[in-house]
Amino acid sequence: MSDTYTPPKVWTWEQGSGGRFANINRPIAGATSEKDLEVGKHPLQLYSLATPNGVKVTVMLEELLALGHEGAEYDAWLINIGEGDQFTSGFVSANPNSKIPALMDHSTTPPTRVFESGSILLYLAEKFGEFLPTDHVARTECMNWLFWQMGSAPYLGGGFGHFYAYAPEKWEYPINRFAMETKRQLDVLDRHLAENKMMAGDEYSIADMAIWAWYGQLVLGRLYDAAEFLDVTSYENVMRWAKEIDARPAVSRGRMVNRAFGELHTQLRERHDASDFETKTQDKLEAEEG
Image (cartoon, rainbow, N blue to C red; front, side):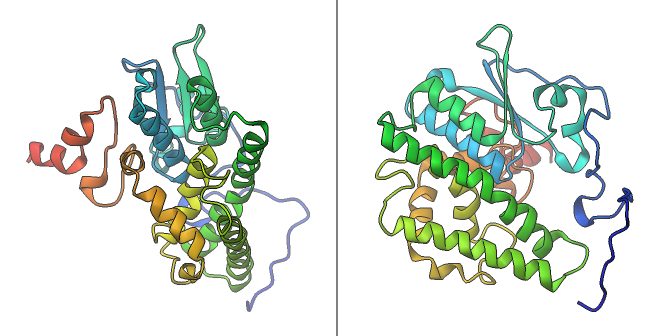
């Protein structure tokens, strides 16, 4: 880098700085507008966007429905973070941290709010008794990897993804720093998956859903256009695992929910019924309007 930044004695916020997401980033919390959350017909109400963190939860819900859990039926409402939907009063009441996803469970009185994607996965796993091992050792291993993902993803998304894909300028130091850490994390996964079918052993669990949404999609070429840059094909065990999970029908459906980007037939911006996958994708809606 040619220029050296000298931090001021006291940092001050300069609006408009920070690249692609500068218009929504700010150093304070709380709502910026008044708007209630919409509520549909099902007890479970999800407010989200199909980023990796959002995909974790929609995959979980679709997997539960595939097992026949009727109580896992849900309404999924699109939260457009680029337009600041996460700062409405309704969303802030569901998640004071203003990050997607947020879940409201109206089967309880009062309704239970659940935020942070890992917390939502654990809540649903315990509520329905699925995708969470009952054996003490296996459950602990599942929790190990779930929390590993929650702690590691900021390096991948907020670190590597930001500086490689979204920052207003390309800086060598942060790209190298976070590329190195991302590859180290992929190596952690690859070594583990060399000896395990899934993250917590042989059984598919919420740990797999959480990690696949980030690292699985990364090696499959769906995040940051960075697969070649990171030489992801060298992680053969991660690739095997990622493809196996990707082939699950519930995962394919989960990836579509609250998706507002990509090919139109992959976008189900809102989901209120299983039939919506056949009739409400964005290509069909636009064809009807046309």
